[in-house]
Length: 422
Image 1 (cartoon, rainbow, N blue to C red):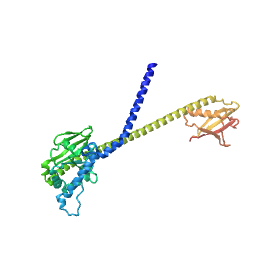
Image 2 (image 1 turned 90 degrees about the vertical axis):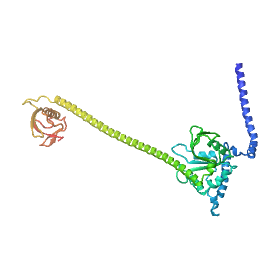
Image 3 (image 1 turned 45 degrees about the horizontal axis):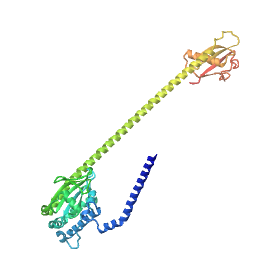
């Protein structure tokens, strides 16, 4: 008992200590919040904080867009245009690299996304400024990039046939990250890549120059490089030639997109055909089942009718046998001629045949009917329901309990037998 009390006391003190620690940590957060807020505003994230700060990454992208806008205005073929005309829209994304990847990434091979044009700019390198002014900001180039940007945004055409443009300074974290990932060793640097979601949880780059792992937090994406140019080779490339390269890659990508779309449509058509075949098979199966059910119902009905007919025939035969037995029990021996208190009755059948029979005067009409029933059975006469009547006077004998004497059929009478079923 004493050890239990000691254990309970220790547990209670531990619980109190845990609550005190939580309370202390909460007080520290409350006290230091103003200091953290002041530090965030006094020392905002710099360009190299872009991999962990979406705000800094977006700001770096907007800084490059602003820089490229100056090249658009200062481009040689743009300055040759009338002063009233404004430069073409800037095709580069104002979103950071992480957001741009998420926008262009293709979640699966059945729905390819747009390609991504990556341009890395070195502000201290004179060749980069010259490349931007003479090639990248050239009117035909910008118009082409804007058209592909519209496709990628879904404004017109298929999204998979479009292209997004992302530019970054190598002074930014995104630019440094891309330079290392894409293997940039000279500037200006231009690459055209296909971005896909990577289900393996890690990103990779494949294509020209081998493959590299992508770090820096840009995970779950795979970059397939279709075109990569850099340095003096890119600078000395005529704008029309570069445009041709880009158009060639886009046509190849468009063919891949069309092939993927055709495969998707084929799969959908095969699925539709299988579904239609399954539906037709089910309908035919249901129709066969319905016909079989109808045939079975008809067989059951016929069987039921047959059994009812047999049962009715059996009951009729039993009733006939019972009636015949009853009739035999009623019909006695015919009284000899000259017996007193007898009635000589002539029975005229429907076919004209006459039957003479003597009955006792106290026999009832039921005895006469029993005699006829036995006669019809022994002589195979097909009369089951009949009535008895006299012509003069006209009288029908329906009451089987009436005696011949009471029916005034003594000493002799003629009874007409009528077939009630004819």
